Image 1 (cartoon, rainbow, N blue to C red):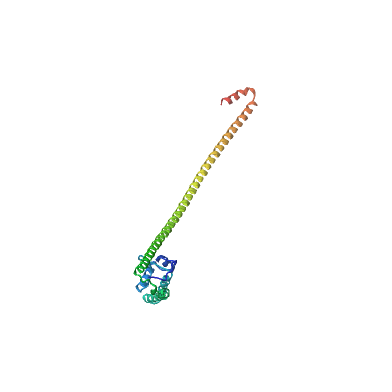
Image 2: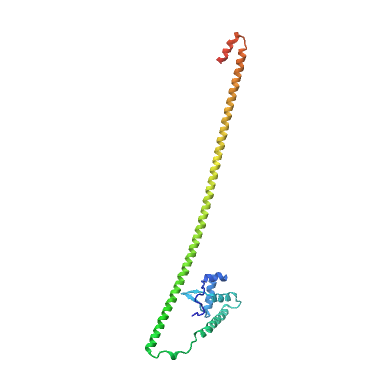
Length: 235
């Protein structure tokens, strides 16, 4: 049982450790198996390893060693046992109080029952904490997935909006160019009509001017030739 883990010490998953050390997740599992094969103890949630800072140090030692991995793992396990045995002996050592235990078997049975109940409550609390930790990690994982989905949806929506804006802009440009072409055609038509009207007016003016000249010439002729004037109007 690991006794070197602090109550509030941060825990890491295999994926997080892999990202921290710059190695693949299967490599983290491989190093964990090598360490366990040589006697190393990991904190576990079922069959899944939970890594703390000291475990990361052990994995770094395996990653950076030039020696065989099993040999390095044995040295790591030896140091782990030393660190566990040293502090525990001083922490567990208590004064000899056996002489102060009650001699009455009934009282002793009550004390043992109380201790058993406290131990069961502690174990139940540990199970609950483990379940809560597992649920928390599941919730965090779902939130990360939701964040990824939301980010993807926002990106897709932005792309669709940009595409719609480009399409509308293109449609407006096409419509504007069509209007310009129609306006140009109308302008050309009006200019032709105006020119035709001018040509007609010019022709009428020339015709009228020619008539006026012939009329003047006819008036200046002798009276006996006025009959010729009437011939002009008959034409």
